[in-house]
Structure formats: structure tokens, C-alpha cells
Image (cartoon, rainbow, N blue to C red; front, side, top):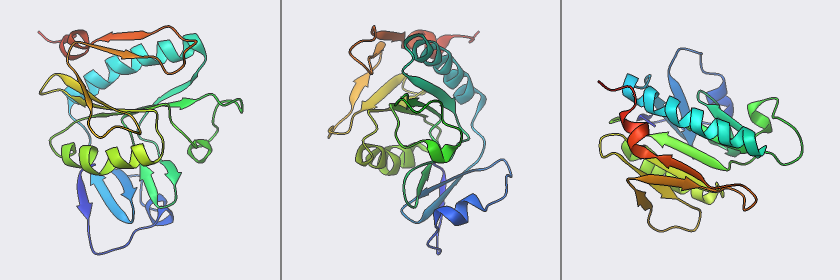
Length: 186
């Protein structure tokens, strides 16, 4: 996300040692990315998605739904802070720390002008390499969601109803994007 900080090969330990100053710090292959707080519109869309996804995840006991800030380190020297993410229930109980998170069912990024390039060009391939089942890039301006899966060369672009079924035993979750993008607007 955000602007890269150059000239230093950062490590996960270095990032974890940074102060809790309200900025979001992420690490992708030695590059430190720093982002300011997101916009109000970003947070409103994120909140609506969270409520829908959390309810579904709890109903089917498939895992746990979280919002950033969070330090998700699925591989060494890569720490990401997806805006919203689902940790699968793999039979070991709820994670006690971020270090306990070893995989994701879903990672969601709500685009901001300062993060669009990083979310699409740096984080997307990383999530695919790490086998994250789905990575959604939510574009508020264009009113659409790009859905990426590990094997995809191109996204599925969704502008009306987003469907998610992380396990075949679960009912399909249908998210009307007009409601996500329009709710609360006057």
C-alpha cells in the first residue's frame, strides 16, 4: 500500500519494531510500504463488507473475519495488511496472535488513490503466490470488484452481485454491490 520507502532492505523484524504511530506499514520482499489512514468512504464500504462477510463466516463456522491493522506474514519478509480478511478454521481454534495466521480464505483491498498500484501490481501476485483462495480489489470509483484466485491471469470483474462460496458445504453468499457502494449516501 501507499508509498514505498527506498534505500533500505527491510526485514520483518525491522517492520515489527516500528512505532505504533497510526501509519500502516507493510513489507513486500524487502520493500517497506507506508500508507496514511484511509478515507471515510473507504471505511464505510469496508464496514458494510465486513458485516456481511463476518455474519456468513460465523454462520458456517468456517473461520474468523478481521480488519486491519494486522501483520499478516504468510512468508518470510512479507507482511501485509489486507483491509479485510478471513482466516480459515483449520481445527486449531481461533488464532491467538497474528503469527498464528498461516493462510487466508479471503483478502480484500478497498482501493485508495495512493494504494491502487500497490494493491494491483505488488500485493495481488503475492496473495496469488501464497495461495490465498480469493483476493478482492474493491474499486469504489468504478463501482466494481476485481476477483483474483491463485491460478488467474486476469481478474473476474464484478459490477452487480458478488458471490462467494469458500466451501462447497456452505450456501452461496450473494453481495449486492449497489448496496455496498450506495448505503449511507444522501
